[in-house]
Image 1: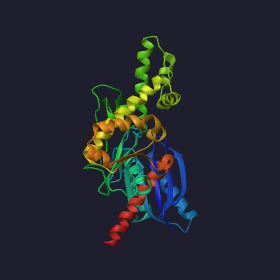
Image 2 (image 1 turned 45 degrees about the vertical axis):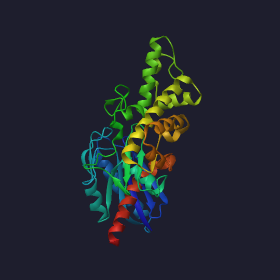
Image 3 (image 1 turned 90 degrees about the vertical axis):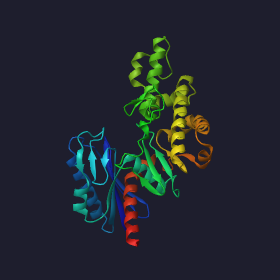
Length: 328
């Protein structure tokens, strides 16, 4: 059986997964990330792939995909000190994997691109040629599928939409006040809540998600969402702001890229009811009518399993490209 391996590298956990070439999920093995000893994690990746191949002698490894937060050198297979992995600077992933597993293709992509590939190949974007995937998790990044190909840009920095400024002032995200990420991310929602709570407490008023100054440090996106789901007006106001800014940000992407689909993961997937109506209203108002009519905004089709499929989808793409080259 032909199989593809996926290596998912995160700040807290890493995983090695396998799927068949027919896209049947076969296995997943997780381990806590050793932030200060990347060599130990690389050894784990190699050993786990070897272990699975020995356990399943009928498996034939065809490709390896790797998903990791940027910055990366995707061509050379280097991790370049991501914020959540500061000791992983200039770490070469390709050499040990290619030396151990021969001439099979190995592909590295940042986590947003990996999720975009997963949704494009297996999820809500299947069959379309122009697609934007937005992470909308702890931060906000995008993976771009343009003209049926993953678009990474000149040096792998395409899709950093979280850095777009949507307002002169506002919560900070991606090092910039009022940025798209500042408004539309888990961290941004928490900061919006903290800003509102401080203002209320200074006036001697408490909010549903912050009863006292001691609660300020406990405010997070989930806590605000729970109160909004109960119909608490102060929490609903926070999500109204997020939805408006999401609509503004999407309008920019629609006008520039004219995609068929925009697929959004994580928080949008969980809080669609709180966000969709207001977001669509702003998008209708802000985007060019012809482009707006051509696009669908959808939650991630793979749902909460998106992370499981991200890295193996990078491998699946590497495998497909290899097959295309053989057919030429």
